[in-house]
Amino acid sequence: MEEPVDAQKCYLLLGEAPTEAAAEKIAEVFSGCPYVYFLSAFGRMVVGVFYLGDERAWWLKAVAESPEITLGLVRAAVYVTDRPAFPLRMEPRLSSPEGDRAPCGAYCPECPRYRKECKGCPGSPFYSEEG
Image (cartoon, rainbow, N blue to C red; front, top):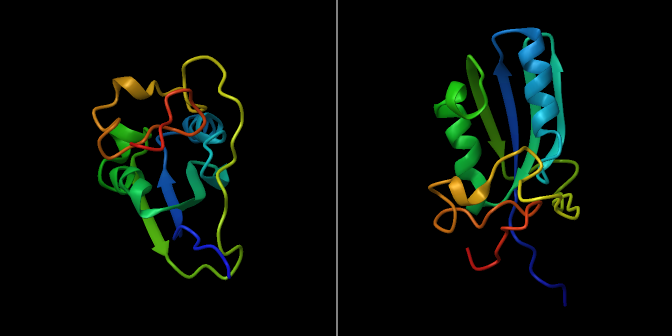
């Protein structure tokens, strides 16, 4: 019998940065995110594909609602499907934490959602399964 697999959804982020340089920087900063499957800048556009469980969906919803505050985008749209054709799911890309920051540079203990809605970034030393 197969073990149950945590449900994941696939999210598509389409965002517009104020400049091409800003789009490139945003893509570079968030490229190390464990949940990123694809992320790139196309001129001023930032395009990303993320695989997340429901417990992490708040982050992309926050990007859609407040793109300037969260990522520095002028505007953003986030689309979601719970039935991606390929790949069906993606395990987070985990690496050994370097220092006390997440790969994007965030410091989990400073976030008001840490240990509430968020268990911390699995790419940081602050990640906790208990949340």
